[in-house]
Structures are given as C-alpha cells and as structure tokens.
Image (cartoon, one colour):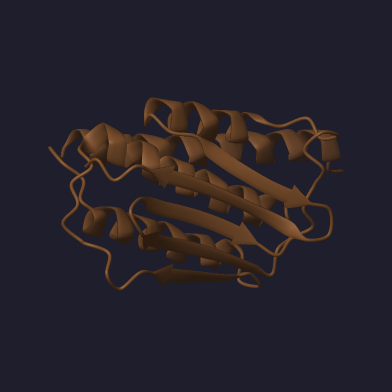
Length: 169
C-alpha cells in the first residue's frame, strides 16, 4: 500500500534535486563564458521555456521581443546570470503557483531595458500572502544588479514582474 506522505516527500526531493541540477548547469554556463550578451540571454530563456512547455503543456508561453533591441549588449557573466535567474524564477512562479493559461515574457528598450514577465493566473494580495524564497531571491538579485524589481498582482487578475535596467551598459 502506498504511503501518500512518503510519495509527496519523494516528489519534493525530486523537484529540489532537479532544480538544483538546473541551477548548477546555469551557473557553469555563466562561469564558462566571459560575457553574456542579449543574444545569449534570449537563447537561454528560449531553451528554458521550451523545457517548461513539456511540463506545462496547457500554458502558453509567449515572447515579445523589441525588434530594435541590440542583440550585442554585453551584460558580463554575473549580471547576465542574475537577469536570467530573475526571468526564470518569474516564469517558474507563474507556472507552478498562478495556474496561468498564459505567460508573456516581454523584453523591450526605451532609454532603459525592461524585462517584464506577466501571467493571467489567479494572482494574490501581496499584503496578505507570505512571499516565498523565489520572490525574495529575485529582489536580492535585482539589488545586485543595482535596480529594483516591481511586482504587481491582484487576486483573479494575474501577476506582473518587471525588472528595469538603466541603460548604462
């Protein structure tokens, strides 16, 4: 007879292990490259979302990339990895917790670079919800990037996370 508690714990361990291995791969990728360009970043995010679609086939993940966006922007490896991790975590949260049918990743440039991840999920009230490690980690990474992360969410209306990088690259 199956024990549901053990099955749940094993599933949590499997998810944690898979996540850790993925993070290690991403870290190794960043360490083995002297720079991460916008093109590298877009490619890495595209690869991540393709894998995510296998596990969440009922969620549409869209990319809206500003056609004027210079692909040769060089973030350096640490900055590039932090941007990637924020995008990755925001997509993960949309897929795992929001019950979204659509996630939109929008990368555009006016005088600054804007990375926005928006879902049409169930949303939440930030004042009434205990925020997890994922959001706290995204905020820490934004601080390391010298910027802030803005989060907008309302129950029943989805969540939007935006990272704005000043155009001083």
